[in-house]
Image 1 (cartoon, rainbow, N blue to C red):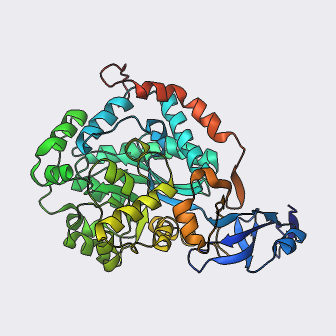
Image 2: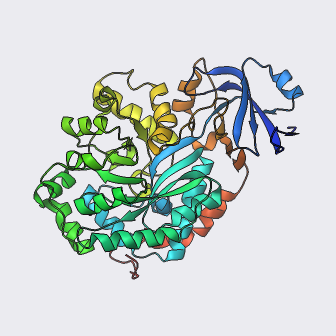
Length: 453
């Protein structure tokens, strides 16, 4: 591949790179045959996309050739917990409440060094799987270090808990935010964890803080019981684990938060949302994130995608936590969404592969407030994935239903390489997280406990 250097009108030196593949998926337009994508690795943007360029012509112009491949925008994983990457495949057969209890017990075993290594493993998994932007809810803040170090894009929301002493809780989190790294690509926000661990007052304080925020909401039936009657297994478990009383909400949590919602908020799960809840989200233009694998594995239920679509709510996809959903794999997340909703709808056409690809890219970008991300077009950020997957007559179907992270051969973020097949970043991250993984794998009753909450 030949990099073409030139100087723009402002006197800046730019470096043009060219990629060619048999198929390109712009996402916001129809698939493009034999496209040559030119992007500026210094400015980080796509400068030109030309269709119907032969392989020989592309080679003559110095393009890197990705035969048998698809070029697509990087995935936007709108809700994740990358610091829990080392927790993958440790438990099964647990209810939502029992899973939370198990998760808390395992987390207490890990030192800050273990958590940092697990977060770095999560960032490496994202890069290797074509995820270029992450909306991460972080307990420790280590996700910020990991995303910046990996060269990925995203927003890290530091979690806050509090049903009493809310002002002090928020002040502590804002102080911790000041100590976290950020960059041109990585922003910071706040995550009031959920209505059963955060009071209405805490939500008000967070919304007034000026930070973008996200929250888990109406994820499970146990949560609904805890919120409305302060009863059931989740209420008891959380009061034991945190020492804080679970708040009873007189007004249902979505409607009860309507005056705080809007584009600066991002609401996750909503498996048990009512018609009134969905209407409130639509009125306030609040985006939501759907996490089908996590909801299915924990038996939480099935998100009503059709109802949200009819209401015009932006719906993005997220992998959620590896401890509840498995690897940080957006290909698997897309297929899970398709399978769950087609089975529920008894309809083999909805949602389409094109719809879930939008949810995993451009809708995720919209949910996080990043205009231009999640699509391939001139002027858009050069967050591009090259994926070697056998293409039939429908490139979108081949990509969504046929590709896996193992097929990803190159990834750039803002025009700069973050993953190339053959790099050992992921292997090194796995090795660094091995001690954390070993501690987490011990049975809960046998594991040594540290003072880390």
